[in-house]
Image 1 (cartoon, helix red, strand yellow):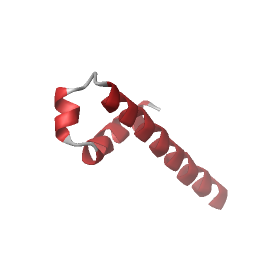
Image 2 (cartoon, helix red, strand yellow):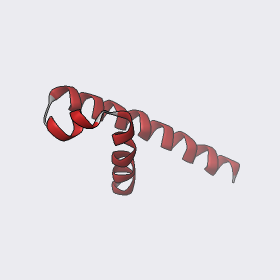
Image 3 (cartoon, one colour):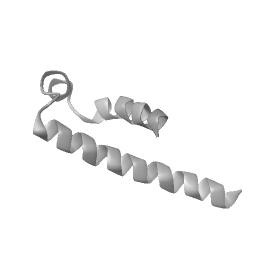
Length: 56
């Protein structure tokens, strides 16, 4: 899970404006967006992995 966390963190910076990420790291909005984004990405990754496993 740790590898995917850093991978998602990199992806996250593209989607959320830099002003939010740099200035308001502890801001509630940022945290909410961050966690929601992580959850969505983790679901996508799990789906892709499960499809690949099924195909093999």
